[in-house]
Length: 173
Length: 173
DNA sequence: ACCACCATGTAACAGGTTACATGATTAA
DNA sequence: TTAATCATGTAACCTGTTACATGGTGGT
Image 1 (cartoon, each protein chain N blue to C red):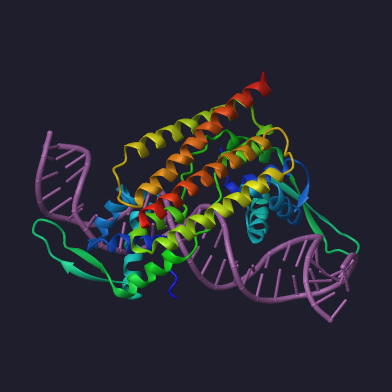
Image 2 (image 1 turned 30 degrees about the horizontal axis):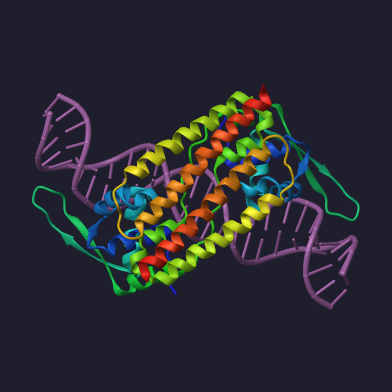
């Protein structure tokens, strides 16, 4: 069973929808799936040759008029197999590694105003995220579930932020 | 303004509560704050000398009877300053980088049973986390807020998982 | 006899990041 | 003329991981 990294899985997943260049993948990642996993451009260009070397993708040069030549990548049967294997692995619950919680944990050392500002900015970001998610196009069958997940999460964070702000303010009085 | 990494901030934060050895820090991180950020033991021992070199901590050797000698670290005024600076920086909203969402996003490629299993295992883990959080001792003033954050999050994930499972099952019929 | 705890570290690697380099085309 | 888009990559770095190495003490 061939182990693949998350970035490799994302690229293979996108390639399973059709032939793409590194640039296309970067664009696609930037819009659709990039919401959940956004590899850096340089990472994409670094990973693609590795995928090819491992037999998970093939590439062909395509010359263009008025545009630089590009390499179009296609997923192979082996690549499909690796992707399915990755899909079948049970994902671990990723608990939050956010610094906000740490800053609260050590919050006694800071001014309450600072903590309130952090909580507020977090809420604003969560709100913005919620709006972006609500405006997102329907990504087909299962993509919608992922979007709902994000919405649940954003709502929970907004609720928490409201309660937290009130509690810090009350403690401060 | 001296930039410090999250791991450095956690260590300085713990050191601000008293003199500790690398081993003590590892134990403390493992129990209290480790819930939100758990550096590897080797990372702790790697970071401590760096903190000392940058003037954020001082160490002294303490010989012990029947025990190996240890280095006790103490935070310096400069370290306090760096920690306060870190605390004041607004934390960015860390959006989820979990693989579950990715697997859903590419869910068309897998059997619905696989997705349902993923969702269920996620819910079980969220439930276990919730129970652990509920059983956690009161970590003082602000620690409680962090715990509430975790609880909000866990509840949201359980809610989402219930809805998701129903929806995948319905689509499958 | 064996395992867990105390105590500190090294080495190798994994999986990313930002910044830089290049260079033509097209729209405002 | 200025900026954005297409198109591919290199180099240096950061932050963290797992696995390994060492060795005495204390409990069951």
